Amino acid sequence: MIRGFSLAVHGGAGVLHRDCMTPEREAEYHAALDRALSAGEAVLDTDGSALDAVTQAVCALEDDSLFNAGRGAVFTRDKQQEMDASLMDGSNRRAGAVAGIFGPKNPILAARSVLENTDHVFMIGEGALAVARTAGLDFEDKDYFFTQERWESLQDTLKMHAEGTLDDDPARRHGTVGAVACDRNGHLAAATSTGGMTAKRSGRVGDSPVIGAGTYADDATCAVSATGDGEAFLRLCVAHEIEARMRLTGVSLEHAAADVITTELTALSGTGGIIALDCNGAITMPFNCKGMYRGWTVEGDGRKTAIY
Ligand code: ASP
Image (tube, rainbow, N blue to C red; front, side, top):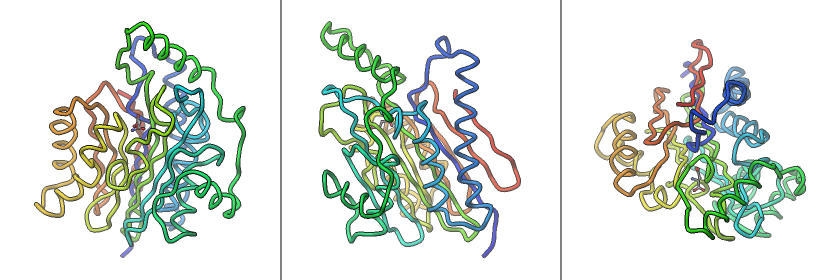
């Protein structure tokens, strides 16, 4: 079946407060989201797969230091960067994920190499890096991944910790990138990549690389990529919870997603959101916080981006 494609991307739910956002900065975010959409669209527009489209869109976001993934990832309390990524192909429910890695320029490609070149779904540590090296992926050093802004966020967070004044400002603490797509053959895919939470403990893993929590895709129902307080998303298995509600009760994606984010997530005092699309390519993007960097396109309808 040939049909129109759909694509959505996010750059995290940790948006800057409106009073800290300059018009120049806002324009940079919109332009970066548009570039990611354009990278995914280039795949879908030439009859490429949803899996390739979400991979390319997330690579573009990882390469942009505005977002907390790949270049520009946040720092752990030990002053390191540990990155998590996952992706899932809804056509066969194959998945690949990596956690706590440093080195591959694009962590999402490391997750993809786990999907393509191993019998496993989820890898960490030296084993994950070895798979990425064997796949011939580009590696980068500390200078490439470092940004002054993330470094200062770490210092601010550690100072607040020490003074007992730690707030829960999502703009300082987290962020993540992700993409969901429906290709012209009706196949779905989802991908998510993150540096995690500022000042996280070394070895902490959030929801982003966990299939069913931060990422899920099944052609029969939907594709989901999440962003927000990882611990709450893990406890709720957000992405799979939305999928399961659709499959088991027949509710629409919009209904399932809105209920899980506004009711369940809020009940656990978690903040964040998701981008998702169903097997007809209909997109929904609920969040329960001030904003979520996001963009979307439906074939023939142009690219759109939003923050608040
Ligand atoms: N969910 C991510 C994590 O917990 C952070 C985020 O999306 O903002 O690592």
